[in-house]
Amino acid sequence: MSMPFYVSPEQLMKDRADYARKGIARGRSVVVVQYADGVLFVSENPSQALHKVSEIYDRIAFAAVGRYNEFENLRIAGVRLADMRGYSYDRRDVTGRGLANAYAQTLGTIFSSGGEKPYEVELFVAEIGESAADDQIYRLTYDGQVADVQRYGVMGGAADVVAGYLEERYSDGAQLADAVRLAVSALGHTEDGDRVIPDDDLEVAILDRTRTQPRKFVRIVPARLRQLLGERGPAEPNPERDMERSVPPAGPESPPSQPPMAGDEPPVAPPG
Image 1 (spheres, rainbow, N blue to C red):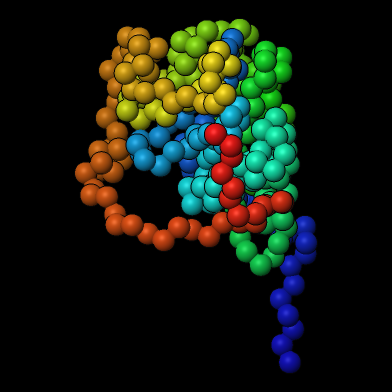
Image 2 (spheres, rainbow, N blue to C red; image 1 turned 90 degrees about the vertical axis):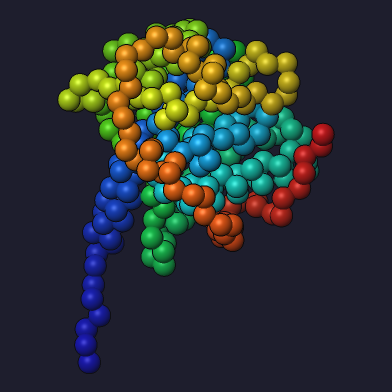
């Protein structure tokens, strides 16, 4: 009779954490920055169809780095949970804190389960308030840990290098144009020198508290982004982007399965 292979729980958790961290580090960084009128999200993303930053609800946005199919499952589940709560109770009952707690439960359960691999994702969940002091930004890691982010945050890629650049240059109460230029410069900063990221390789979105509409999420289109960035040096060629855009789009695929979330039910449309 053969003896079963034994791995200590400590070693098992360490191996799963190393696996998730390596997958996340291979992705491009995402930066979140608080500015005078809201919260800014900037990521280096050559794809025009697969977004890293998305709207969840009226005043709540979501950003992610890692495996696209995994964080897209989480985004869809979050939208369904927010719609259900807003329709069943009140739109004001949908909060970034509640959504972050639901994501933390889901990620923690998946990480500690021995039946499936851990998710290779990290998330930002942001909610804007009536003033900058009321803004809330949460960072969630692959194992379900939640951290409260103040002023700015970075995840994925060379996060330590980008965060160090922001720490030296960030100032409170910046205008949108200044915040965009700072975030883009931080993404282009490397240990070997600075590079200019092409405008088409940037995904930029904001939660703008000055909007009169209930929905505060806005994507920054390329034309407006060029105005905000102003004159920059010549951009470096990106072979990955050029190759990606030369490939014809694939045919339709069946939607991926979605992870269960606390309180998740079939989607219900919110009131108009």
